[in-house]
Amino acid sequence: MSPKKLVSGAMSADIDREGQRTTAAPLGHALLEVAESDERLVGLSADLAKYTDLHVFRDAMPDRFYQVGMAEMALVGAATGLAQEGFIPFASTYSVFATRRAYDFICLDVAERSLNVNMVCALPGLTTGYGPSHQATEDIAILRGMPNMTIVDPCDAIDIVQATPQLAAYDGPTYMRVLRGRVPVVLDEYDYAFELGRAKVVRPGNEVLIVSTGLMTERALDAAKELAGDGIDVSVLHCPTLKPFDTETVLAEIAEDRLVLTAENHTVIGGLFGAVAEAMATRGVTKRIHPVALPDEFLDAGALPTLYDRYGVSTAKIVERVKGLLA
Image (cartoon, rainbow, N blue to C red; front, side):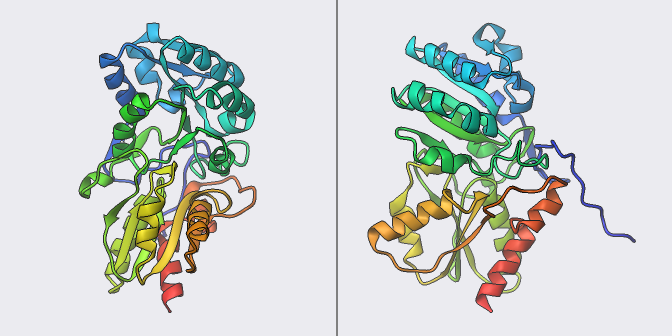
């Protein structure tokens, strides 16, 4: 039998595996639930509601949805005006378009005034094979230096559903990297609940620690299960909030005598690895940390499974990396 061909549509943003438990459009349904109890919540899109899952909200509450067209700066401007009038806007587009095209508007219109504008953006990191024009591999690095900005990188549908009402209630600007379409359900198997600003150990282990964020937490957990079969005990610390960073929890876990890796769906520069290194340097913690991250380069276009392996962020590559470091 020939090996299974690794394929995906280049613009595919569904990251689920065959047979995996998923939730369809968790962001859209979570927004709708919040909106039913809070009439201040409104949705906006830059012509991408269908591809960021806001179509669920749009179709159910058309009078509270605003379509601004392919104009990301106008999207942020409209959200700013709505926030100033007491509404709670959730503005959606692709991560690359928000952070690259509309940065100045987010910075000066939203963040400087610390307005409750929530940017919910799809195609974070390597979740599309469409190439550098759509792969937001540096979005966290772009926004981490922005004062007042809160950054959330959810692992799965559980994270998205639980984070959405907390972002709506938070008094300030937020940015969430949205997983859309059929989103895996992972964290309900663990004693976990999303808490804005907090990192949590979702799997304990004595030999290796993987500090992870976003969809890489699922791969870290899968790698931990596989490594357990070889007698390697792996702990996974999930950091869904990258700013503000839960320095206390992360450094307490790093202090234990274990091999430590970070894992993120983002360039190795300016994301989770950078946040961990900064926290360690500030507190005078000296320990080697091994990053699993996307390289500091523009990535290729192609089928996602192939790209995950090529850039070292697949479950198999995490397993390989851990074994190599322990050898």
